[in-house]
Length: 272
Picture 1: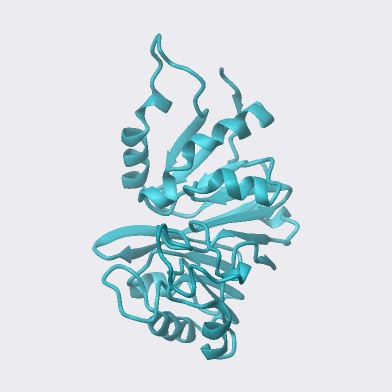
Picture 2 (picture 1 turned 90 degrees about the horizontal axis):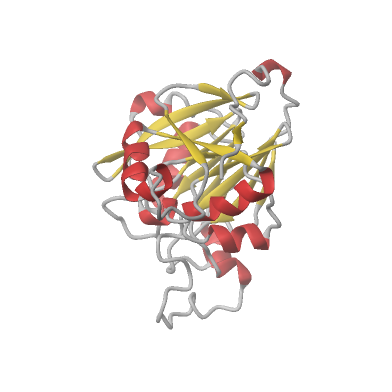
C-alpha cells in the first residue's frame, strides 16, 4: 500500500511554533530492559513501578505533531501503554538493536494515518537500517504488509514541523552517534563521551536527558558520576538520567543525586 508523504520541511516556520514542547519518556532502560530475563536481584524483583524499565525512547510533542526518537524493541507496548496513536516522524540516534528493532511497529501508524512516515538519522544509521530491514525498501512478488517510511540522512540542523532539530555528535564507545537538541531540551543517550564542539551546543539547557548506565564505569556508556559531572559542566537547569541498568534502584539512587538531577522513569512527562 502506498500513502502520501507529508514531508515536513517548510510546513511551519520555526518562529511560528507555539513554543510548548512536551517530552514523554517512553522507556528509560538499557538494552536488556529491567527486569532482566532470569535475574532475581532486588531491583529486577522490585514492586516499585519506577524500577520497571522498557528500552529507551522519547516522544516529543509540539505543534500538534508527535516526533519519536528511536523505534525501541518495546515500541508496541509503549504505544499501547501511553495511548499513542500517531507518529509523524522518527529521529534515530544509532542503529543498535534496542533502538531500531521496533521499526516494524510503524506499520500500525501507517494504517491509522494513511501517510508515509519520514525517518531521520546519520548516513551510517540510515544505511544500516536500509540494509538490516531491506524488506521495507524493496518490492517483490512475495512482499506483504510492511512499514511505509522514507529515510533522510542528516548531518546539520533542519526544520521539522516548525521545530529546529539540532543533531548533536557524541560517542558511544568508538562509534559516533547522534543526540538531538530541540529548543531548550536535549536528548543524549548511549553516550560515553561528548566532544567539546558538541558541548558548546548543550550549554544552559532547561532540560538535558542524558544516558547513565550504572555507578561502575563502562567502556561505552557514562556512569552516574560521569553524567553528573557533565550535567554540572553544561549548567543544565534539570538533568534527567536515562538508559538505566538493573543495578540502579530508583528511590535510593535519586536520594544520592545532587539538586537538579534525577532518574528517569517510564511515563515521565516533561513540559517546556
